[in-house]
Length: 358
Ligand SMILES: C[S@@+](CC[C@H](N)C(=O)[O-])C[C@H]1O[C@@H](n2cnc3c(N)ncnc32)[C@H](O)[C@@H]1O
Image (cartoon, rainbow, N blue to C red; front, top):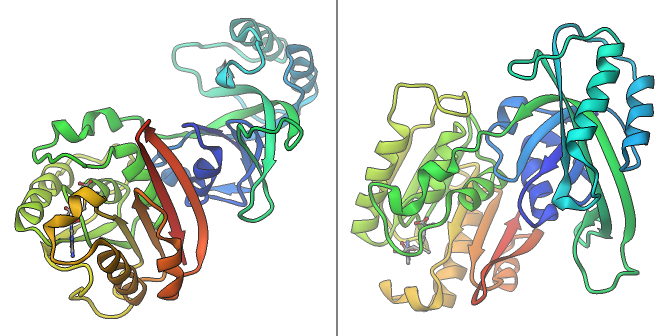
């Protein structure tokens, strides 16, 4: 069993993304989840999971309980160690430096040498307390900050485990404004990576963005190894996406996530009439134009999104749609089932809706 340290503000969404790299992911406290199995190279490509550790055990979120747990835990490792502690969202008030010292001392007493610079093994100690709520999606528990304090179960958790894999935090180097081709409305790389992962981006899979804009999603999908295909109604977007994909994917050096970068194809095309055979790709992701951007095409926005959803259904068995409103009814109308829906507040006047469709 493993525990996951989640990032971002929406644990349910982080869990949904983590399911692309781990089996049977279940939230256990705000910012923490457990899973039965993980694929370390896919963990490296996650946006909203920071670290995955092989679970030694879990207890209440206080140092005394953590010490008892570590003293009793079977340890089948050799080599140097370091302890790193975190207090998720500052929710427990535990003194992390003291945790690191005192848990480190237990490991020393058990015969380990400490190496803080370059340890063979890192023991993660994650403390979190808060409420877990019923997830309407499938009855799992997930954390949230709802209004009614009686709704959720109050939990207090310390998870201890050996660090197994960490995600590569290089998203800052791909800020939309720093890319060779930039247009307003480009998706930020964290959201782009997460929706690409949810759509199934990975080595050997093919992911299509039929309204690719500047190619934000395609860059992130390609960096985790997927072969990517993009279309956009505007020639300047297709040309710009090619520039961005050339810049980020046509390289000989190893990709930061350790997998080889995917191949790419981009052309001008209409998302409501895609030039692809049925079931040609594994997953579709698109970021629907927002009301004010929809003038670029002759379609009404409703017809454009419905048409794109129908075409996505024809060419793939899974899709993720990002938009400034929920297009769930339109998705169901063309035969998709709604696996999950999330609302992500970007800023005060912009909420992004993420639909996961199967
Ligand atoms: C919100 S933007 C996508 C932004 C993109 N995710 C990014 O990171 O840059 C929507 C894109 O849909 C394109 N578009 C509008 N109507 C289209 C259609 N019928 N077929 C294909 N693309 C279309 C627009 O040209 C625009 O680039």
